Image (cartoon, rainbow, N blue to C red; front, side, top):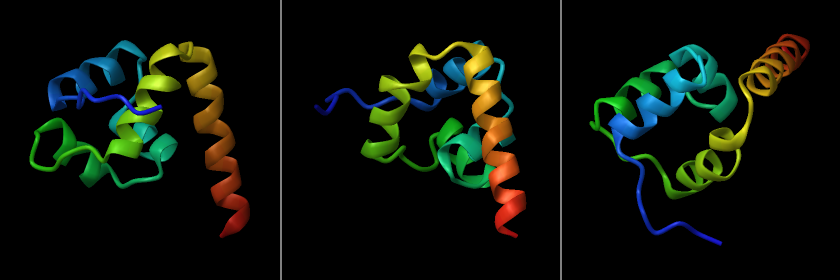
Length: 82
């Protein structure tokens, strides 16, 4: 299932802040750079449809504790890969 409505930079920022996630944490969850997060928030770049759908289907409905745990697990995974 795909959503037809595209998330705006303002909506993306509001969601990130509502979930108490820093730009760095959101970048980790989505597997992108902080520069990309900033570009999306400032609407200098469009959020890809697959990211848009992932955010709407998972992050938007996840609790802040779940997201914090996700960030921590991804950080540890990255450290073990390096």
